[in-house]
Image (cartoon, rainbow, N blue to C red; front, side, top):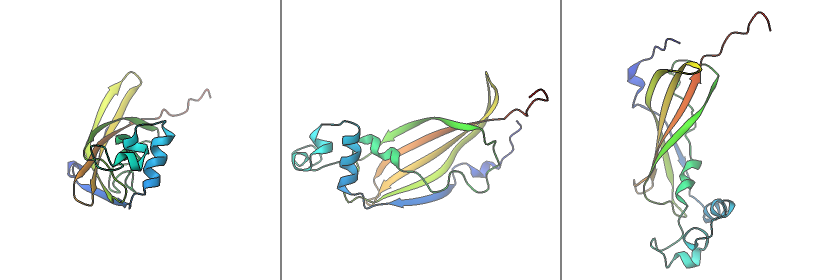
Length: 156
């Protein structure tokens, strides 16, 4: 699966997407759908007495945000056989009602590897989420694995 690509792809922003303002209801719905009961995440009145002086989104709320484009338009064509191989998340400041969230996307890494099932290409896309105050909400490194699909055999 010889992979040839321009190393200039690495670290270059290929998309920027803005979300918001984030509604209080979105934050409450997310927390309640996960069964959360801590007032900080589900009770706007009680949350005013908490460490953030108001309601905040659960840390995992940041995983809802993506860029519009999956990969850069000038990235090599990878096989259609692929899957999400996990995420590394570094949490920053919490998201609050009214916040705007900007997601920038870059190709952090792109490499080949041979596994038990054969050759594969791993693509790491980094999403950096900032709020309207330029504070980091989260940095998410999302890994995708693409495997070369075998040609159908003559025997069916």
